[in-house]
Length: 372
Ligand SMILES: *[C@@H]1O[C@H](CO)[C@@H](O)[C@H](O)[C@H]1NC(C)=O
Image (cartoon, rainbow, N blue to C red; front, side):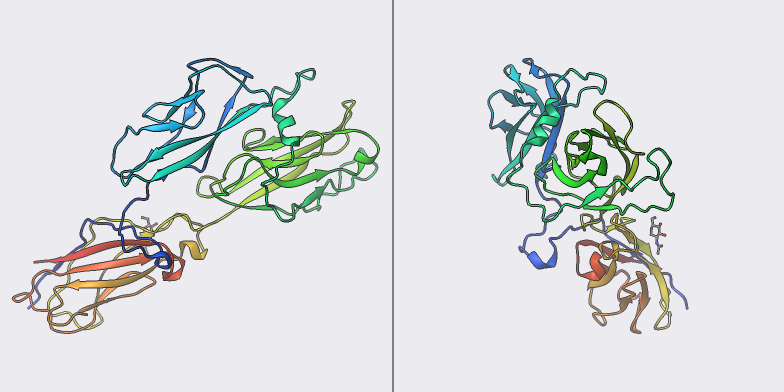
């Protein structure tokens, strides 16, 4: 006689610390700001009282929408919804201003985040205008700890005005996502051999130019201004330009590709909550009757997104504690032992773990239940 059994995955989704840093505390949420650095662009040096600069987001894991935030610099204030405004008039003397904001989570822990207010790059045609934002980049960044920043030289063009050979390959710049900065952070130096003969002005165009990426017009240093998120955009294509100071063209534009390198910043997430399944009482050992599935937003094909499944517990553990097993790769669940008896046990709950990094990384958890 075939009796239908239903499996139901319980609604809870436990998000755990990575096993390497077990704290004994299971929490579905880590309080904090959603960025390590906020960059707010402004279009003028003199900023007036009340001006809204931008918004920060702090999640204290209690679901509260309004949080008390404190600015370390009394000229700025933060509303409880995270909006950062000017409390007093501020002049960006050297094109930028940096300060910290504090927030306290429900455990009373203090969280600090950096805010950078910076003058956006003026429009190209304002030649007479001093480019404060760019000047700021000339200052050596003492805290910067980038080992060896690569140099990209414009490929030699043949006969000066003729197009360079099409098969020139410029190696992509690999840049890890979620960099902690400090920003702006040097990525690469663009160079042209003409720089020995004439004064060269460098510029960039393309995706994120002058926003995510800036170039020092004189030295050709290319900077990234904020953390990049591979899950948002995995690569950027920019064109680097070098012209002589007089305005004449010196080089054909050089294409620069920035590849954002994946970090394991996403946990697996079960695609359903709960999962439901059913199995016939008389099913043979080895019968596959359902599958679970968790997705991971990290780079496909990378260990960061390589999810493995495991049964953590079975409730009740009767007649044996391992009546089922799961294929770690596919999430398919099968009958492992005989003895399913609807008269005795009509519902099982299995707690399933999904972990990325081939089972050793970040965890998502779910439970399933067997229903009558
Ligand atoms: C898991 O779910 C995702 C998203 O719904 C889907 O694209 C993928 O094919 C599923 N994988 C399996 C093994 O069913």
